[in-house]
Length: 295
Image (cartoon, rainbow, N blue to C red):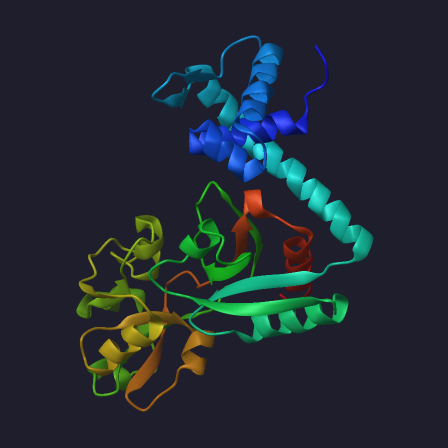
């Protein structure tokens, strides 16, 4: 058996996504017959059919499905290796899209400044990520990396760096009884509904942002669901509920209509830098190093 050709892998991956020889050929700028030839050669190397084709449909065999699951991350890793070597040869260049939630923190801006000093030929673009969809922009490749609130349990994402934990505060309307307090205990959260994120955010993440129970296990009332931090603070000001925010975010969002009261007895809030393991590039890795240097 000869060595595996990259073009054969590319033809199989394109066909697995398109399930159509013509469209797969268009993606690769190859003829339909050439895609079919590459697939046959690959199947000969494997020793079995990977694709079932008829006059009406194309679909993967069970072996083809298994082969795809193992080949896709391996091919992505190969691409990342080549991209990394190319970038190292010419320096880190191009555009790095960085997502952030809520506000551009001092740590994020310091990391970007350091990144620019180290890699002046690489531009950066900041993209705000909604509170309701922390990981979606990374999955959809709308950003190259994102600084998002923890926790993160996504198997396809990499947690590159995590900033130190920040103390939690409770945002309440300035006329709320809690607004006159110097601090609160976590157990007192049972006395006001907590505003949380709506949308596609996974449940484990939503329940960590808007707690469902105190450390002692007492239920916390559920408040309205919002899509953005500003929407949440507007509801807080209107007396519709309270919202947990880290101390740094509270300092950046101070306003007369909202008071931020420190809460004891809770784990601190942390930001983490994440990216998709299949979209890792030299730019992303270089930015991760800059974040690690300023955390």
